[in-house]
Image (cartoon, rainbow, N blue to C red; front, side, top):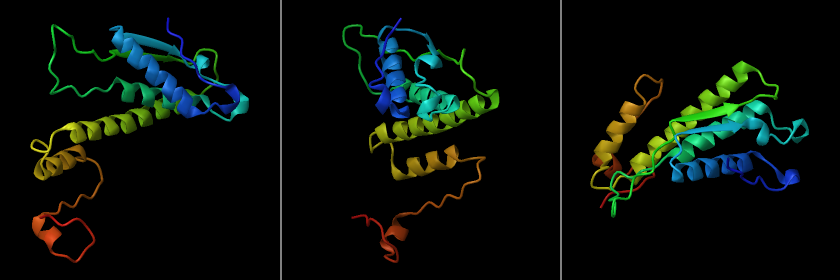
Length: 171
C-alpha cells in the first residue's frame, strides 16, 4: 500500500494527478513491483471540479507510461546493482465512478499514443551525437511514421547551405 498526497482540494487539477501517479510508479519500481493497481476514485476530486473521469484515466495512463520510462542503455552497474525493472501491468480501476467505457478506452488509447511517442523522442534525444547522427535521426523519423499519413521532408547539408530559408547553417 502506497499513499501519495494530492495537495489542496481547492487547487486540484490533472497535473497533480499526473504527479501522484508518476510518484507511485517510480516508488513501486524502487521496490521492484511488477504490478500496480490504482483506484481512480482515489484521484477523483468530485463532479464539481469539472474534471471528467475519462480525463483522469487518460492523465493517469499518460503519467504511468512516462514515469515507467528509463534510458539506461549506457549505464554500468556497480557491485551487482540491478537495473530497475519496468512495471509489467498497471491496472486502473474505475469502480464506483460513472464513466462510459468508450470514453475510457479512447482516453487510454490517446494517452498511450502520446506517452509512447514522447518516450520514443526521449530515446532519440538520449543517444549520443556520434550514434544519433542526422542520417540516423532521419531514418528513425521515417520508420516511426511509416503507415501514418504524414509528409516528411528530409533536408541535407546542401539545402541548409542554400541560404533561401531561415535555419541553422552548418559550419
